[in-house]
Length: 370
Image (cartoon, rainbow, N blue to C red):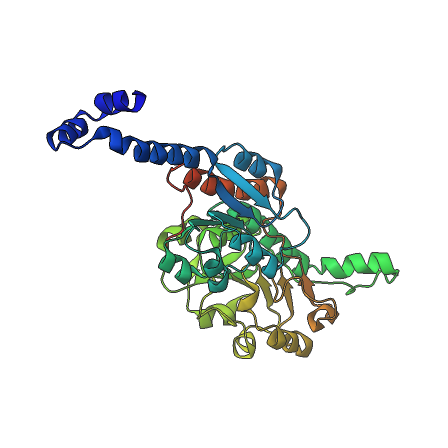
């Protein structure tokens, strides 16, 4: 009787149609009731299941837990990446979304293992070279990421790395600790001036501009190269556009700020390193794969270039017996370009917001174009 009254009130046209066609409403009620109950049970009990591949900053975890629809499956570690086989096993249990890090390879195999239920992947990173975007596009899976959140922090670190390499800070700290700091000598531990130098930035994007802005305070001349001139960005820092060959030949400091692609992979090889000045310094805080590390080792050891500062390597972490670590003129940071509490919390929250929005039927705020 209740269902009949609901139908009469909510769908009068349906009941009139049933009466007109002499269809027995009573005969339909059991099936309608079963369907209605099944639908209500699904709405109340089905959760939007999300695999989170690392214990994230609490602000992001709280955001995810605040959404009633979300059920979390968390790899409860901060200091190690989830093994690939474990991640695959977890998504095979049925998953609607994944929140991943740069250390997690989102491959065709993983997406296939997740199956058709998978709807969104959100990565706590600006770049997404670790994600097979092709397979996501094929399967209609949304990709969220965290753009424009680490520009200033990464620029700070890039200039820190440049200064540390130029002034041999790492060597100096070692001398203090191992007792090799002795009597003052006129040329002991002398490095290269940053002020008044020529800095060549390959790829004058947001981070490149931010780096240039900081170096203008050192009265540096800024030159840049790239696929095309960028008059607006160049105007902000008074940068001059040159060819890549001119940049390598003229710069005291060469700072790549380009994305990883077919052109930039292995960009700094023997040939390009040989185009640089003998007293030039390479500073890489973009992608480790842009440098051929064997070629760089030989260039540093032979004196082809003066020094190198790296915040990114291949692999990461770099093995402690890697040849680059034997060179005093190679300063290596452990990929800490965005490593401030505020920036990492912001990144984590952006990645969580992507998941929360999708789970509640809202537009994904930071969605990559596939």
